[in-house]
Structures are given as structure tokens and as C-alpha cells.
Length: 108
Length: 127
Figure 1 (spheres, each protein chain N blue to C red):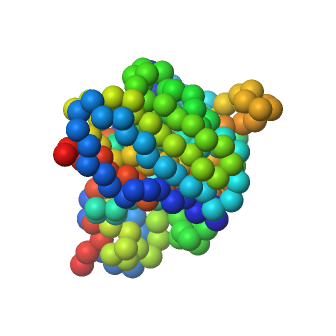
Figure 2 (figure 1 turned 120 degrees about the vertical axis):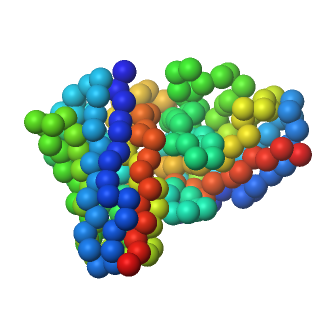
């Protein structure tokens, strides 16, 4: 299986901060990388697919980048509604669609 | 638009079989790929399986011997069965639609992503 490692596992930030979360794959996965946001008690929500394509309706302050093994999710100006846990997922190996361990963005 | 609703028993005894259903509204179950994902309390997401619109299935290797995904077109729903459950199967179980899209990035590739999710159903394994 392809292993996905996210860092940091949690971070504290303030409204208006620029926040970057990293996801690393155990092997090259091209741009087969998705990002999801999950708020407590809620289902995950798709933010970005194919590494950098913003899902319809997602604010433009979210952006994704990277290719190969290293990927980033950036929030350009953190809003109060962005405090949540973020998961990456690889879809290079469609035999096993593995998720990263998650990064929790908390209020500083 | 497509909406999903999970249903299931809530509580299952160890060694028994867990059966969950995901009702699809706003679209045909025959038209898309579907998946189950679970989340143990306080932990991350674990992909379980998916089924294609032609009935092809793929399972998480760590669960493959115990899980089955199937589609019921007459009821416009899909299901998950997990056999021989233990406490480790305690989790919130989500169903999701898997979009399969061909895109031109640095070549033409087919991307899989989960764009519609149910609200989740909590399953506890306990005697």
C-alpha cells in the first residue's frame, strides 16, 4: 500500500494567518492527491482533487500544490470556519485509496 | 443533487456480522462508483472499499477477507457487510460517491475522488 504522511499533526493559528499543511506519499503518485476538510461531528468535505483543482463551491483561499511525493494544502488567510481537521488521500493506486493521518488546525 | 443516507444497527455483538445500507437520492446508483469509509473514535479516516458502476469491487487489503460491498438497483442503494466483527470495528461509517474523471494535467489521466458523503452512522461493537 501507498502510505500517506501528513505534517504537522496539529497546528495553532490565528484568523488571517497563512497556513500550509504538508502531505508526503511513500512513493511517487503524480498528481493523484485529494484534500478533505472535516469539522467535529461532521462528514468530510472534498476541497481539492488532482492535487490542485478546487472543488466547486470551495473558497479560493484554499489552494493545493505539489506532484510526485510532496504535496501542500494552503489556506491563504485563515477564517474562523476553517478550523477543522484536514486529510489528504491518494488515488494513484485505485486498489487502495489511502488517507493521511490528518492535520488539525486549532485556534491560537 | 445526489444525497446519501446511511442506516444500520448501531450496536453489534463481537463475532457477529455488521450490515449497513446507504440510500441514494437525487441520482441513480447505477450511474456512479460508491465507497465506504470508516473513522474509529478520535482517529483518522480508513477507506474500506468501492464498487464501480459495472459491479467491479476493490477492498482495503487489511479488511478484504471480512467485507463485501454490493448494489441493489431496485432500491437505489448500496450496502456494506462486515463479518466476524471485533471492538476494532467500532467506528463512524460513511458512505460516499466516488467521482471518476478523466483530466488533462501533464497527460490524460483518470482521477478518483469522493465528492458526496453521507452524514455517517455510528457502529459500536460490544457484548
